[in-house]
Amino acid sequence: MSTLKRLIKRKIALFSFIVILLIVSAAIFAPLIAPYDPSKQFTEGLTLQGAPLPPSSQFPIGTDLLGRDLLSRLIYGARTSLFIGLLANGFAVVLGTFIGIVAGFLRGRTGSIIMRFTDLMMAFPALLLAITLAAIFSPSLFIVALVIAMVNWVQIARVIYTQTISISEKEFIEAARSLGATNSRILRKHILPHLAPIVMVWATLGISTTVLLEATLSFLGIGVRPPTPSWGNIIFENQTYFSSAPWLVFIPGFAIILLALAFNFLGDALRDELDPTQRGRR
Amino acid sequence: MKIYILRRLIQSFFILIGVTFITFLLLYILPADPARQIAGRSATPEAVANIRAQLGLDQPLFVQYWHYLINLFQGDFGRSYLQKTDVAELIQSRLTPTLILMFSAIFIELLFGLAAGIYSATKRGKTGDKSIMVLSFIGVSSPQFIAAILVLYIFAVKLHWFPIGGYGTFAHLVLPALTLGILGSGWYSRVMRSSMIDILRQDYIRTARAKGARENRVIFVHAFRNAVLPIVAMIGIDIGIFMSGIVVVESVFGWPGIGQLAWQAIQRVDIPIIMGVTLVSAIAIVIGNLVADLLAPFVDPRIKNS
Image (cartoon, rainbow over all chains, first blue to last red; front, side, top):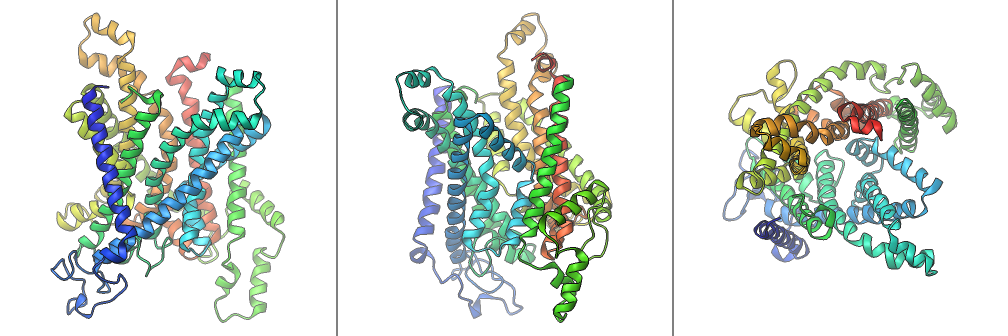
């Protein structure tokens, strides 16, 4: 990889990091930034025919189908989307890493039973499973995050499993063992530090998956329920206006893609830097 | 080889049994009561209990599962609670549209994905390569519903090139297939690119070049056949991603396939249909992976020996 390319790669990573930072701060400081209360319905927020308003000086990116300020909803929606994305991914990473390490470290019968179970989970179409789960449990934000985590831990578990096995077969593990190190010491001091970069890469890439799943579930009307705004359900609520007021659909859509893209770019750059086996393949 | 095939077949069988059990468990703990749904709001408790007994919902979990499994082996997926039709029939009537959409989408994925991947690999580090890789990232980061609405807005609402939704003619197929295909090609192009780059570094490629083979021949004949191997394995995985995508894309475009069927059933809590579609999708995924694994030794004879 040439130095120039690395630099450009880093530039994309830097840019992604800035985008993520901006969205995160918008979410945190939503009450300060948002021009209006996201659930306030303005009487002047609709045309006389009852259609949403296009962007104007009062409503910078227009109003939604109920005459609410779209910008305010978008800013508050960032809270929901990020909260669920991070929470779901957190659950998935912790569960996946734990199961992957246990299966990889124990191996033998326990390990293979656990891995057969992940095979089973892989046979389910993820979204269909998430839809079924979301339809079964009446979703709160927490439940939506849990549902997304339930379909997303498998891949991380499999990656960590393979990595754990390959690390435990290295000579330095054998050396540590012959020096009398206990299993828990080997796990803590030798295996976990080597897994950390891989977990970090997958944790970053995973956020983009969970953000997209939340958006899709909310778009189908079974994720985050209105009036709580999330980027997915803003599109769900306003989709009937997509031909007359396309910004109602495409602005939140752009926000979703931007966030997912930023985490994907950042995760990919991290992988290049942290995972030596990937180096030079780009 | 024979042992390997046999082992994979048995493995797939057990995965399918596991799938039926998990689907069954999930839907068994469903809080919404189907008997009450069928009976309607004004039904007496006796009427509800009656329907429950009729459906076998009052029996223990394992007995219900056993009946379900036995029926399944006889091709009986149960009856829809609300539509009063055989689920197998419902799914069968929806299968053709989904298969048409699936094969068209996979064709577009391969066409765009392989072409973009090969182009990127040969122009490695240049502007063309970088733009394609950024585009493929955008494809991977875009949820299907946004792409679907965007495509619908541009090509149906604004340009009037294609109908806004529905089923029947080739024109109806274009937009849903394009939505699924373009997004999916992002993955293919990335895999194809890195595989091609690995292959182009091999000694035999240098030999071919040294012997004076033209660049096109080196890429499309010598390198392509080896570089395409990981793609074969991906098609199996892709069917899984695809089965998830059809629920969204079919409901946006009003495409009457099993994705739309599943979506309608989920809204009405019509359990046997949800179970049936999930099962059919899982079967498709398991078969897809099995075929990819079984094809691998024929595509790449090296696997046969190891």
